[in-house]
Amino acid sequence: QATIDSAALAGNPLGDAAQRPLWVYLPPAYDADPTARFPVIYLIQGYTGTLGMWANRSPFRPTVLELVDDLFARTDTPPALVVGVDAWTAYGGSQYVDSPGTGNYHSYLCDDLVPFVDARWRTIADRESRAITGKSSGGFGAMITPMLRPDLFGAFASHAGDTLYELCYIKDFAEAARRLRDEYDGSYDVFWRDFRSRVAFTKPGDPVLVSVYGVAACFSADPDGTVRLPFDPATGRLVEPVWQRWLDWDPVRMVPRYAAALRSQRAVWVDAGRRDEYYLDLGAQAFVAELAAIGVAPQFELFDAAHGAIEYRYPLALRFLSERLAR
Image 1 (cartoon, rainbow, N blue to C red):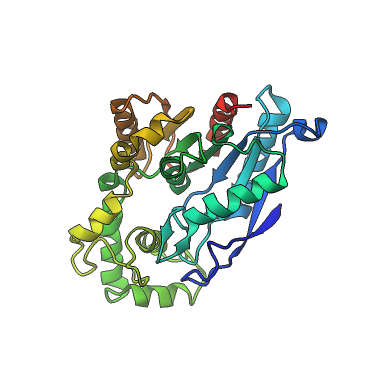
Image 2: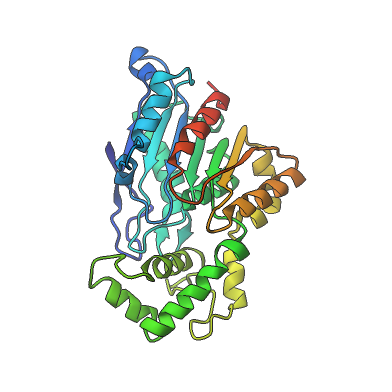
């Protein structure tokens, strides 16, 4: 584990730490040959994910750290470094974008973290040897980062990444509007005062209220940091200009705008559970269909699962990416 002082996060609007932890997994081959250089795969987390969660253990299941170690230590997977990224905010996440509502987390990832890793470990510092992968909001970040920075990333994998926003988000707007009406006088200020006065996530409405506001802070904050909701909290009705700002971040809709960057990718992996509660299986299908329209054919799979407890998918994509990165 290491620590980075991020210039991009200095003075961020939420007052979150600019000094961030990261962990770097070194495969056994790294020490075996002190002259060799290796590809790098960045592993990013879903909303409310923290770096320490990679070590969380569920009953009868290995941790993500153990899954990564098992992949490179016990199989013939070509060795690569795996970098775990911290992008936590006071709202629970950053969506890995630059926003006046949360901070410059895209710049932190691309302009601070990548050079930091390349300077300190024996990496192959080239986009042909660098990939990014994640799940949920991390899957979203893994999709959009190579679109925005194809100079840095040449491959990606998304597990149930946020896509097709009319399916995955609008139902949450309805629930958030109800919770605000019935429990918080229609006010997010009242909600945040209550939420921060007690143990987090002890009320049923906490997860949806946190995530909806947090993503709004990422996607639809004004230049002065004012967070604009994509719906009227009094009625639940969409506020179309604000909603359009969210749709502009929908990977399905981004594909045509970033076709050249996507065509340049060495490898693309997309998967999702068939029972995903946010309909991200349908979003994955829509994303893959848009990729097909520009001539990109990813590795694509729907599997029998819901949105959670799919950490066992990480090694599949890590191996896929490691086999296809340049060496």
